[in-house]
Image 1 (spheres, helix red, strand yellow):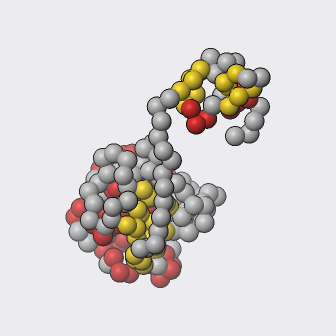
Image 2: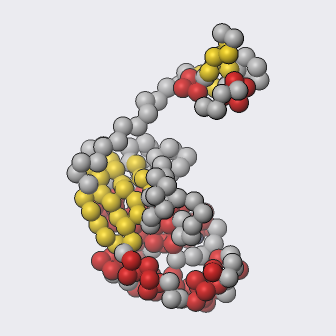
Image 3: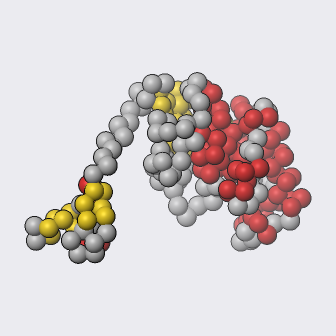
Length: 200
Ligand SMILES: [Zn+2]
Ligand SMILES: [Zn+2]
């Protein structure tokens, strides 16, 4: 595999432990930006829709995707679909969209590594012996892109991000600022959602 498909040390630091899934996501993200011919996103023009959900393993992938693409949660460039799948759609308004998913063959073969025996016993990745973690990470590095990923161009994919606004108001009850989109009205006064009693 290409060297720049291996996560830099800061990505492991950001992620917090050494597991195979952050590097898999990193590679997926690198491949997607190369496929779409875009740079790592500095601002707000590249979107990722990971198909992971919650309450299942291997979601670590998405930290690698963020590190590789710059499409981060904090920049509101990432929105999970909650399909419970190890896949993601990558989208740039000028370049189109592509979907990457992990192949079942790759997932099954990787699942035989000792790392996952520890995980199934409930051992957290940072507590798994280093050689066991490095073994599976290095094996991942040695696999081909074709074995790991199914790639589908998504010419019809459309996404319209929410229009931004800097406007805000002070909640009449708690006195905190609320951005316009989230201001609610109670007794004719602007309030925040928690003070309003509404759910949303
Ligand atoms: Zn991890
Ligand atoms: Zn309030």
